[in-house]
Length: 521
Image (cartoon, rainbow, N blue to C red; front, side, top):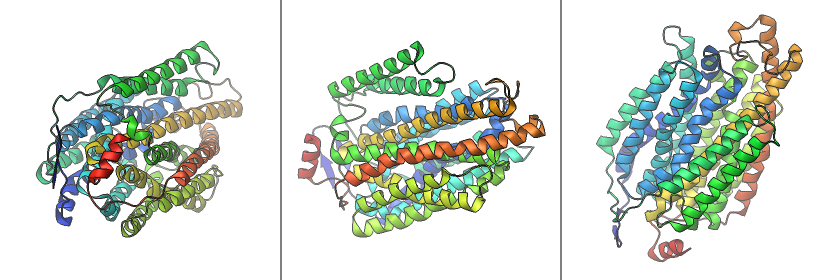
């Protein structure tokens, strides 16, 4: 069936199972390469920052830079997907990602690496948003659960295989850490070719297209200013200072201006009439909370195992397997159960509760906790993630017409990524301040001079007795950020409980009356 309106032509006929699998092949490769770009670095990053003689704050910003640009551009990619050919946009995102990966591999210092990772994030944001949009455009919500197993498998392979691959790369002397970035290039090229051959989508045609670049720019600027403030407050300047006033005030003014623009423009980047509805609003709040907890907590696990426990990058990758095994198992099982019943709220509620319990367990680890206890807690966190992240996006997609699917999907992905960016920045700042204070106290030297001119992350360059102190300090300090993650996750539980009972539709698009009602709201 083809739905025709004043200025839009969209293919809404559902594909057969074989066609879906063929189309998914390229999309899943694109999603895989986007996820690997983060996970392959997770276990290697302590070695990378150590070799570049970087700091804990720079460690955080190598991760945050990618998340920030990915988050800021996600709504723009989503709006573009409602206006232009989705396949072409996915391939454009792949090209941007490849250029960023090459630049990161050639970085000579942490500043260059952070800049390259920021550029890479432009492509990552496109891939994360557009893959969700395209999948929603070819598979009805009720049927989408049966394919969650494939998504879960990609997530598991990328997040388990990525750290293992990153660990192996930095542990092999003739490769070196630069290949952690270059290794994604051939995979991305393969995804580009497979997409060209397998993905067939109608082009959305709309006259008088106007992209809200001003709104997108204001959102990106406002979020960036606030995150820069989070990273440096309490260290470079005080909480109550003119710098805090300027940055917080400036960030809020920029975001306020962004809201004003979004309310006025005809085609907003973030459709406020959608995000203020009950189901999308609560799903966004839950996604923000889950993103803060999951990204913010999990990104430091590799550092915990290496710096806090003394394991090699390869061993650290192996030790994170329980986390991703939990994601794979729970996303596969819950997806099939949701497709069978059409009910989604119970799984989201259960997932948020399980996620909080897992982070509470991690909140009591230290440098000497038995590994099986850490593994069980990580598996519980993974189960919670697998039951919530994709299903929160699905809840929003189920409530909007196909014509606004891109913007709605990107909005919930945007807030989830925003939560992750905030989480990494805030928890990274907490960890950096805690480690600095504890190292200073342990070594009886002023803060900031605990290891002289050598980075505390460059363990091989430190005396053995100092290495022992660094292991203890990092191992004990990491628990605090997991407890914060658990506290943030409680907000997700509340939002999930307030969701209305949802029955997934069996059609690609809303029925006409439902679509008219959704647009009117």
